[in-house]
Image (cartoon, rainbow, N blue to C red; front, side, top):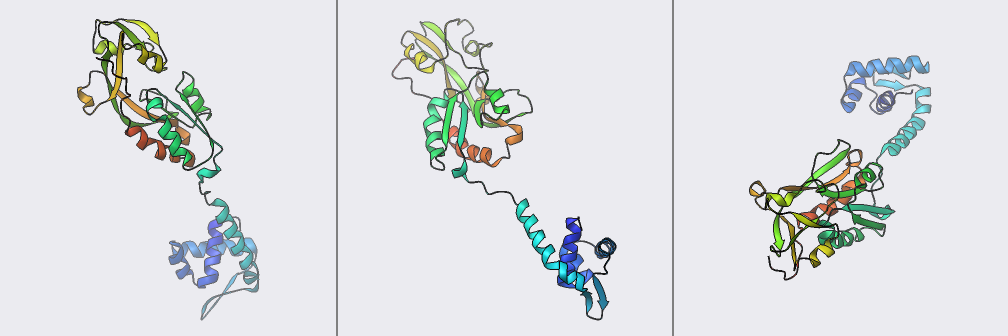
Length: 272
């Protein structure tokens, strides 16, 4: 009796003592139940049930194996049940987040995760190797621009951002370098085709310090993305094969609302 379906047929027959009632209970045809019973009789070399005026009466052998098989089926059913996810059992959470979202949302994300677990939290700026770390599962979740990526990377759209020129327009243009985004493109030229970057930095704090004598492209969310000259869709990223994993779904549920509330960073009192 290696077939679990056959096992269920047998145990249900023990309860109903009727092929018709068993078929209705299991949502199968009566002919399927009769065929399964015939196979069981041949396999176990016992009639299992004797037809009588009251229905199908189980044999002594059937009565002897019924409690053991019922226990075995219960054990199998318990073993196949998915484990209930408990954030408290998580050992570590690793996130790689693009700036300025790391600065604007990082603390709120840490606070939200900490409400559910005491696990170690590693939250870092997106790096050129972050995508590979997602695939090797060294990073659980990431936040970056929604771009053409391999099918092995799952992307969940958050919202659309754009940019405005900000700072001392008479000064030098500072290009803020973001890994895997703008190393080889000049988004600022969509706003000022004559602008030329002469200072290149990858540190947001340093960039803001330069705004009195320089200017840059300031990232903001857009309510009318179709009209924005600079168009950046932001997304939550995960390994595609993990998108239905409890830990990943839990993290997305926590992080997504925080990201959607992202507000442009304060650049101080620098005039535009």
